[in-house]
Image (cartoon, rainbow, N blue to C red; front, side, top):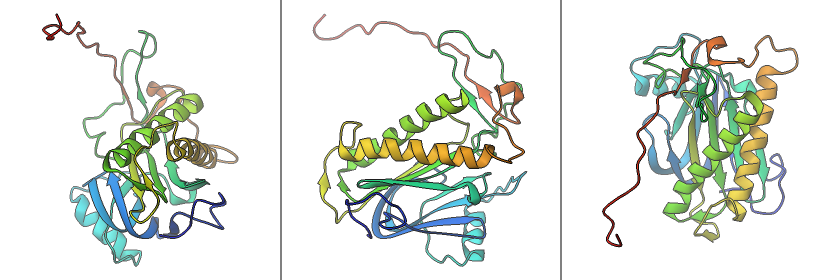
Length: 259
């Protein structure tokens, strides 16, 4: 693991040693514990994780084989947690604060709207049953810390990152997420021990800030300046997307021992 808690300049003191080659972003640090919500996700230990751009219209059926080919073509021999996205790696941005760094790519061509008060869109004309598999847009977040997190704290770091992603994306685009968002959380087993990663902890607070700032920068790169792309105003205006407008049945909980 490189870097320490002092300083927050990612070019001076990075948590991840990162490189982009042939549309593949590799994040590297030795003996890292990872927890991924992406394809073939779950817990793992190793030196690397990846974020991979896929071409427009990508519909590969053998995702494992595709990932192996892309890594080999980019000259990366080590396997590790891998996220896929339709966003070019030129829009990847990283942010560092204290013991945390986040790397984010952001695209919202497939927004996932969640009306809360009965307002918003009533239908999702561009939804697809394959939306969970095809990363046509996607917000991918890879967040790591120099601390050694307990198992529960590493899992909670996924939730903290997802919450920061949703809050930031909702403020910037009006959507809390897309149909294919994914998070990889990571920690250094040799670092200072941390039992918790909630928003009031050093790790959680820094993670929220890093995810927010890296996400905003990636959105600015993808949709700002001279870009010909725009954030869709609604699911109906998007190339793909869903609206969760069903309503669940809600009831009190009966039968407790204190009743």
